[in-house]
Image (tube, rainbow, N blue to C red; front, top):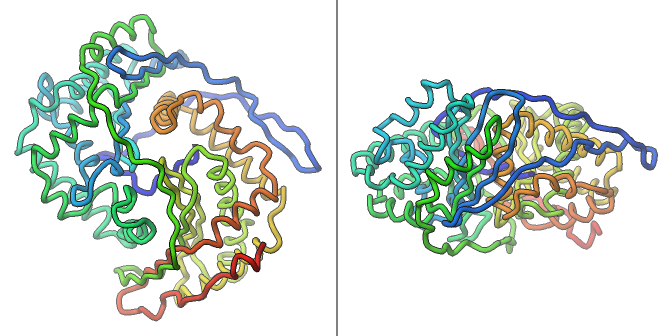
Length: 475
């Protein structure tokens, strides 16, 4: 799924994962251009619900004596409120601090002693926790996930909250406030989305909101969003399904369902005018960010715009890379991306200038290349190159049991249908040059956010205002 997330934060680094072989691709010919299609069979899994509404998905893979368990809660930073940001990520930390029957810090310790890979992460739309363990320790992973789902609050204290609040604040300092270009993302989000939009604040939250969080606020957040009916448990790997079902019922079945949740609706946005900002930062090279409102995940528009992003910047022969980095040699790097999230999306182009170059030069070339694309269109060969990349990415995403488990959990959580894992490539089927051009006109002729990040004391390196051709001139 093309769901690159704008802000994803986790307490620990991820570790290398186990690998398994997957079927190869077959090649056919169409209109003189090599066409590739996935030949692997549909991925098979079993799905059912507990009486409390918790969704269970079982995926068997006996190629290695490993098992992965992931609990994905349908809660992220978009479920927070203004002045109460950062709760979802803060809770990710709190979930590792012990529960009623598991001592403080014991969650990591017990799993690391059996050689497990364990972590969690938070995005705008979901929070997940996972363990990859030797198969004979799967029950331990399920027990630990169960205890913190059902018995976290009795072990929660003001001391733990204060401790983890300080950890998150320090994480923000290390990853955002004291990192070159670190605050660019949240500045763009605040400009792109109207005040109060669920994507207008960062996943990690603001310092003042973290400071203001009270113990009862955090506990109420848990009561609402960490209920079984708001969770999906996916288990993959080498296990006996009959035994696993018995464990799942034993450890998760007795929990009450939880209250109904009012979810933010899809909120695509449109800017009334172009927004331009300049940020002087402790950076060596100026960087230009261009961001347009775009499509949400799991849509045809999301897929076609993903292809458009590849045509612009994926590979040395892509439109923007070729002219900015290779031919003119004025940019250090360039990247275009379509980032679809659950209720909205963004299309962005980011260019880092070479020393001595200005962001006005960067934007001039980007504007020229966009105008040329809108006038002349794209080729079927460019589309096919992108499709080939998508096929490779799809295969790579399934190379580990954890990768499959994560995809199943993500599809179930964000689209309501885990079987979309077997339909993902349908969204990219039969993409034509005409369709790519139509989507390019829809997204790239809208008003956008332009952020220039320049070295301190050098505002003259920022991009000067310059508009794209009017929409009627490019259709």
